[in-house]
Length: 362
Ligand code: SAM
Ligand code: SF4
Image (tube, rainbow, N blue to C red):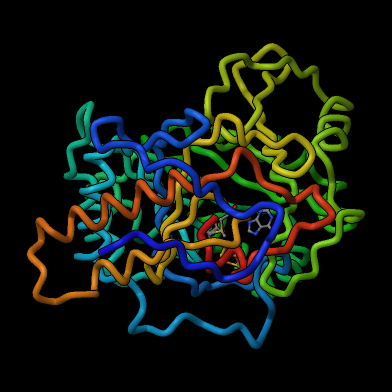
């Protein structure tokens, strides 16, 4: 099957790169700007147990059709081909990945895949709800790393922000992760003006207490309700200013392709990170691709183009698995080949993707 990008929106001045042929298989997933792709984020569902205001509307969300959600066999088939092309880390996300009934099976089957340099890593980003119960099985299945999202440690704020009164479930999930051997354990916080910007140092202190590293995320224009407003975004500079009022921060060198810039707190050992996608983009070192729960490949969170992998997986029931693997590899290469040098969220012409964060996979 030919690898054809499915354009779900038009961003004229930033149409995906379309010159020259995709990179040959022997060179792995290298884009036209020389970036080697090592990380595939797989969204397992667009559904969630919370309704964070910056991600999903309270009501009226249009869910993906259940029949379009990739099966575990399909996900594993894609992951095997991706690993053969140099992907080393698979991050399971959503929506809320723990809502997927077969989550342990997904982790077990991906973690058995051998990459170019040995077993692949299987990481997860979760809101922590039901993590305490599922963590032993997830670890036994091969989960290697965890990021848990928590935007406030205040019960009422949590209920207002997520529209669900479930902070105790999240605390329980964090406690279970802290008691496990999974390290580094990371906590993610979206900084929001007038919502949690007065408790940023307290969130860092909470993370230090449980032996985790906090990473602040600048709020991005990816909410399904399209309500993002630049003026209410708390910037990297503001975050650092608030932290510097309590601690001495010293930059940690060697960021590589990581989204977070890190600072050592009061000489260490604790560190804090900031993911400043809006005010200090890090596209030049991006090594990430995304697969949505309904089988669309994306080369950027902010892209308006998708590559129809489910069409390859389900297109011709008679096609032999070997033939399908070639089609998957061709689609992965096309997606990488079409990647732009950077996102355009600071351009006046930027159009927010049609999908919200819960349907893209954060
Ligand atoms: N439900 C899981 C969770 O919340 O961790 C995984 C999916 S969630 C979409 C992944 C990450 O994206 C979370 O850390 C969340 O805070 C972040 N996120 C969601 N919407 C965002 C936005 N508009 N701007 C910045 N980060 C966002
Ligand atoms: Fe759910 Fe995560 Fe989105 Fe919050 S950020 S609504 S927990 S998918």
